[in-house]
Length: 277
Image (cartoon, rainbow, N blue to C red):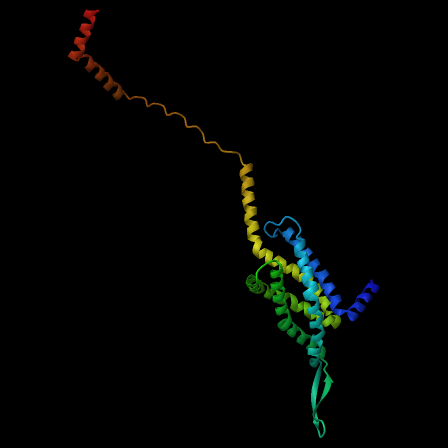
């Protein structure tokens, strides 16, 4: 392990851009692999996804190799030069006849802390925000969106994640600038980027697909419940019995029959029938 680290250190000195680019390629790809596994575990995968998306991992590796590695190498090599002024105090010396106004540089006891804070402010204002926008835009273009769609997606995603980015990168970069040597800053940032990219992917997938998957799960549970419950058959209605006539109705019926038998026309027909017989 010591020999491997020594070889890596020599590669950083001889070919810093290539070494940091290959490192970023590996770490970005690993971060996407982790993100896809977490998305599957939390059931927030893209709609229609049935297997591992190798093209997505390839896009992340390409971004790390061609974009992130070179940019990180140059930015974190110039950042210490821009903040070195905060390590010292400057005292005005008496004017010299030949050289004019001169200052004496004195190291500050709090110079290291001042420089770390200066790096942190410069990094968040002039690097992290533009770099995050660049990442969001390039990834949207690699996914096949048009230029205008990429701009809109970049705006939407940046507004949703910038607050979380500050909570993640400010403590991470403070530890980086305090503990790590300057030439290892790109390696530390790429390593933190592995975690950050997985968090970013989960954030966007929860925003875009969590409600959709929850609705699908609820619908499937309702179908399963309906299939498991017994089928209810409506009972056949029993025939309604005829109402029993009352005494008044029976007496009225008897009176009607008796009155018909006393009718003269009926009596005549009855007599004619008996005579004919």
